[in-house]
Image (cartoon, rainbow, N blue to C red; front, side, top):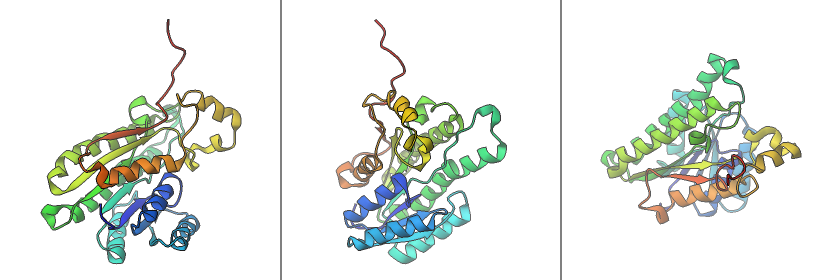
Length: 257
């Protein structure tokens, strides 16, 4: 990947912000998409610019097709067509299946699944060498919940990320001859706003960390490094892959004898 623009959805906080910072440090212009936290997006852009990088913030609801189309048009006007897309935007679900509402499920799927598919559509239209583009790379941020089913209360979230996984693998095959690579990064529990009480409740955090082979949750910058590698030329023959960044996955219980 040359120094073309990197578009990061959900880029104002957490894993997305870490990706934006690392991409900018490598010299890429960065389009930081955010949904509602304008202050966080502005702080991130200032941090990048103050460090000598090039970044702009773009507000768009990734659950809206029209907003996604307008986002890509705005980014292209500012930086040219993106050479890389990182889909980090997503919402969590912490509710038992028996208590979920249709509206909540639809919103979850609109952002996590449909939004990912539509941002990929817009990226492919601009990147495809068959449509006059110069190729590019896409990384979709999924979750270890995609195959493990998630923790209690995360069944809908797990299903949404499983959809992201399979869509990404299928899309990678579809566009492999069009100069586009598509991969997935699957974090385990990561210290972001999405983990809620784990950031302040030491007892709950220790209980979760005891289920991770490496004994701790991930830092956003650790996940971001995997994303940047998949975007880079070092991963030039990697497409359709699902890279787990999880500290070893899950420890379910004591070993048998």
